[in-house]
Structure formats: structure tokens, C-alpha cells
View 1 (tube, rainbow, N blue to C red):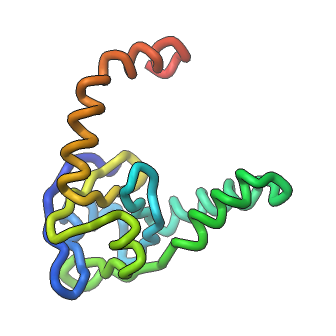
View 2 (tube, helix red, strand yellow; view 1 turned 120 degrees about the horizontal axis):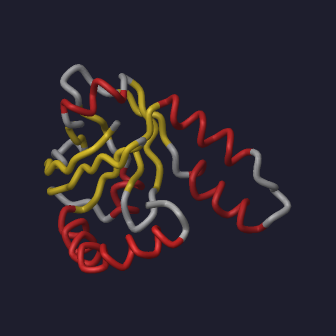
Length: 144
């Protein structure tokens, strides 16, 4: 399970170190996609294959399905993790997530998220204020 919050630097060559704790679970090849809430999603190849299968089962006759598939597949890239645990982030994904030199790398159970550090801190403050209300809503639908 991928959990935790780590602060890292996007180096001059546009690489980010994957936390050592995540490297074991992620393997040597990953998929990076545009994420939601202005972050990037990072998936293991196995998890990406599961997501790809589910997304490809959606009807291409529905505009929402087509749009979301274009968003996810069109922006996805396969990336090799180098020998010291760094991943190269393509320019278009750096721009998409507004990444600067400082980033937050977040474990979210089955994926990793990469955030602009300032954006993550702001998002986290908002969610922390709403945590009780969110838990209440999830409890009402039987999640918690």
C-alpha cells in the first residue's frame, strides 16, 4: 500500500526521486498521467492495466467517456525509474500540474500523486477543515 507524504525537488533535468518506500512497490516501469485537482497520478504497470481495462469498457458513444479517456490516455506516458530511483517528468505534464522546484509526493493507496508543493499545502488545509463533514457524508453512504 502506498501511503505517506514526502517533499522532494524537481531537478534541472526534470527528474523527481521516488521515495525509497515507494520504489519497492512501484517497480522499474511506471505510468504517469494527468491527475485530478491539478496533480499528476503515478501508477504501477499492473494498476495502470486495470484502469485501462475499465476505461476502455466505457462507451465511446458517450461524450463524457470519450473526454475522460482522451484526458487519461492522451496524457499518459510510460517512464523508467533509473538506478537511483528517479523518474523523468515530461514538460507537458510539468506544465499541466504547475510543478515548480519543490514538489509533494503523496501515497494514495494504489497510486502516487505528484503536486506542486504550495498547491498541495493549500489543498490540504481546505480538506483538513472539511474532514469531519466529509467523513459524515461517507458514513451516510456506508463507506465509513
